[in-house]
Length: 500
Image 1 (cartoon, rainbow, N blue to C red):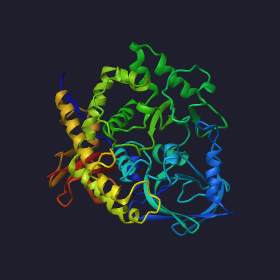
Image 2 (cartoon, rainbow, N blue to C red; image 1 turned 90 degrees about the vertical axis):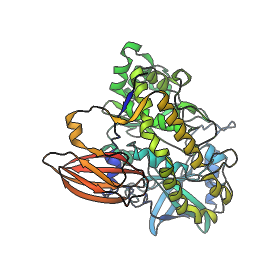
Image 3 (cartoon, rainbow, N blue to C red; image 1 turned 90 degrees about the horizontal axis):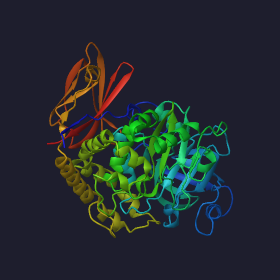
Image 4 (cartoon, one colour; image 1 turned 60 degrees about the vertical axis):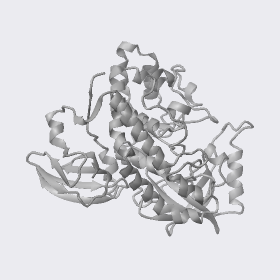
């Protein structure tokens, strides 16, 4: 097989800008603090009401048959009082298999226009199936650092009146506000996969009538116009286009490159509950006639079972199968591991895992409703707990797996592809990986603002250059960072690895 060339990562500027602008969620998703959220009951037995509302939404076989109703309550978030809002339990496996129930907060359910930190909804996840309690946070951080539009997260101590429920993960809701932050608009239609019990949706063609898909997919916004035409057209192209026309046709209606990056990541972290396995946990945003894939729910990752990174497309559902059966797309898919490999390096994983654990460790030690003992949290950062692999050891094995596969396929991750002169003028970084000095350029005739951010979105260095410049990065610890360069109204980002 011929040698492939690796293109430098261009991250999403929208994600990076969240560190600088006053955009919705900046306070709630501040990684530097543990938030405090107090649910204030408006009537007795709120917990019983939430449980009843949840249980009554499922049939005898635990298949969801109707939406879970909200119950009115009040909320105090970091001392800010919110008037009557909606609260309900959520999830499936994370609800049935955990004593600490996951929660959805709808801030403007009963008071139109009410928001907190610019947000109308957010989620409280319980870490079900994850002894380390940090898998989902790490996954979303890595995805966002790769330029994927993925939810932000933080942590909060949650109370219901005087009862301490424990530490929760706060997870951003994928809704119109999320679309505004990440896409700059919410004009398009947002669809979400609706699991029926344990069943997902594999994207198969079920006809041109939108009613056939109501059991599997729901429209989250613009319900008054209820326009499914773009989604139906996407499924038609996916399932019914000839092999000869498929590559160009699917590229015109689907953001293939980002999907391949997410797919490579899902396989690298052995996600047990994603489209390729269960048909679950994704959003689709139809923007300007093109569908974008938005990942969701990453608690069941870094799990037991060594699945290969170089997969056989015919073993997967139609979206993966048809795309990877196109040789050019498969080549791109395998090159995505060049972008992922630094994320699994020892230096980067030590930084991510140790940083997350240091923040939440003292709070988990006093958590009254953990699914696993505190010892499990401590051990699972590195070692296996009840067949759930330790994060650092799993990452080390995956780093070796990816390295071996890339070597076998003669994929050279250290050689840059030829790119257009315009792209060359946008952002160059060298050497990569960097040790002490980093060269940045080249922007002829332009002043540029440069920021280096860690994987938590925090600025660690900044500078102003004219055309090009050089930064001393010797004080940065080994690991992965994102370099953001702003030239006028344009913003460019690339992944930086420090390795000594």
